[in-house]
Length: 587
Image (cartoon, rainbow, N blue to C red):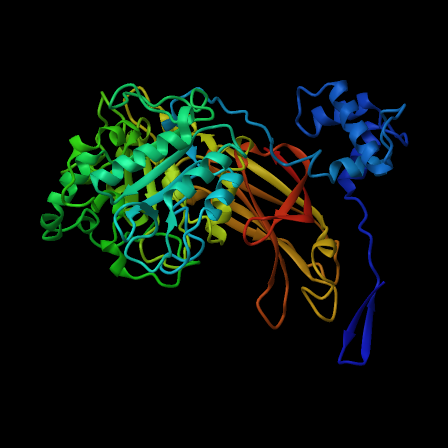
């Protein structure tokens, strides 16, 4: 019985309702136990194959599941039987560890060139908060690496005495951190969440003398972990498998910084690459729900990596050690974006575009972008007016094959939830193999056109059974001071525009353990790029509905059958107990 106080001296009592198992669960137990009161390992194996879609499941697999459930429920080390009671069966189905919605192991082919993968990418990875005045630190870098981020960005500037290198967001009030501290933290934590390579992208604003110092720091800190290519320009990137436990440096070669500095004043006299495209396109615009400071003035914002340069006395011949460290060459060729997207047969490189520049490029040159990313890296970065470290819609980049969608990992909101969702794929290793259609051309040489109207390829059927665990994660009065919460679930798809939709369940009033048992069907034209969005809210009649948890899951990785879906908070941290029980089927 739960008691809630009203008006100071009155109380209301609510009976705690224990949720009955969903009818589908009871029916499954009755069917596979053949009407008995226990399910044997062989019967559980049949359930795994026929309902959960685990075609390769063996009796040994079923016995291992049964053993773990029995040990967890009854706290005994050994059992003579490998059979489950109805309550044991429920324990298995409601366990996020034993019955997760996606595979927790690396299972993609990791032997293709790096450019064949989407890569979990950070932007200004050293910032603890906003882009203008927050502290710089190695702490957010460590947090990102522990989450599985594989691309870390560092902005390098001389210190006040010009004899050492600091990491900070240039021309802002951000407090610096020493480069060596960041490098040591990267070395210590680079492979705590994934064994696959970490790429460090550098924005370099240094003299040749300090570049030489950086080269020394990098080589001494990383040693044999550092990947240095044998030739100046790679013809093809190595694979993630070949680069396990390696550190990769990506920046502009010193010569290009010199050229950029010499051309800086002339570039200011003419339109920038962004301005060539005119106004923002009507469709595929950046997601602005988390960014209230947008303005058209940001049109002229460009990434320092592509426009700023080192000190005027730069001479490429004076920093040979620094240049030899660069494995992924960055830079924007002269002649506008069309030329920048040209695929060169004898070398691979990285191109960076702002979120607006990408939108404009895809308006006119969408298939050129796709073709470029089949061999080269494309990095997308947030526009300069995202002072509060908000983010943008990543789908536009993914639809066109962009590997590095650089996000402010210290921010939070729905865009970052989508990023977390994408990189839950492939065991959370930070590398997700791009779909074949983004990598191949047809017989006529045509590549995937994201704007083409496509037929429905498959339909995802989602049933939201019930939820549980909020009473363990939140105080009794967190959602409502006077009664138990009124939960509902929003569920939908984010992906190509034709597939995007959100739906919601009915509201279940005054119940910490709501049972919805509602079904939704989502037609998918590009299921390979679709993400399943799930949000739980608590209905509030007089104010904004309260947030109660969220998750985002790659549709291509969803496991068939009845699954437990753990929920996460606003910042993407896993809630201890809150979860949903759902069912997924492709029809």
